[in-house]
Image (tube, rainbow, N blue to C red; front, side):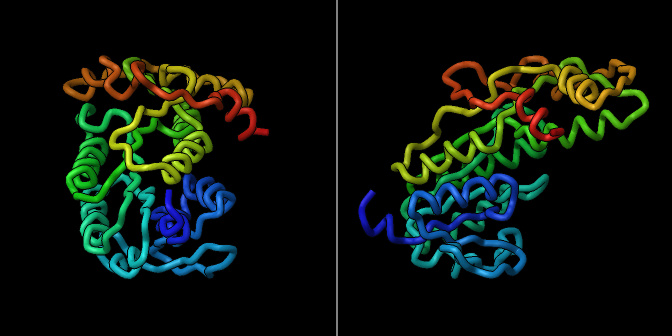
Length: 258
């Protein structure tokens, strides 16, 4: 990476989220100037400039990408990732951004659920933008899985969709990989990143309950149709050419519950 690229700020969307909280200090430690796009105002400092804007509403993006060499697009939600990314891509193209790094999800384009479709459409917006790009598909984060199993474990009877399996990855492992990608050259679609093991959904809930000293009965539930076939086929998983994170679900759970 040349001096001009190193001296130009990196724009990070979603920098105030879980993943952003790991990425920002790592990029700062690498000596990068940072600009964070957020829907709410924050005080700038410690080498991080905060700018206010809204990707979905297409507000404040042009000024956010002005003078930026690299964009790290972490922002995401249950709906609208495709539209938000398309808005960001248009602004990045006009501003002459030279590297767009995007975090997507394993199963994008394969699992027939709206979230996965939106992620796949966002990937296409990035790859067809004309901006040099890198996309990393990652598995579900330990943090998200913990939220899900915590809610399921609070039920008097836990539903058990037997076909559903996850290969959760630690968000710190994802942050480490993204920092490497930001520091590197545009690489297209890079190897997917998942955790060390694949778990049936019920096993994840049971491990949480055991750690809390609780027991619950489980009730098998079907997952019908195309969604069931996708999970049965493991379309949300990856085994070939995958990069494996170092932090296990068990280690995360022990750390989380203290």
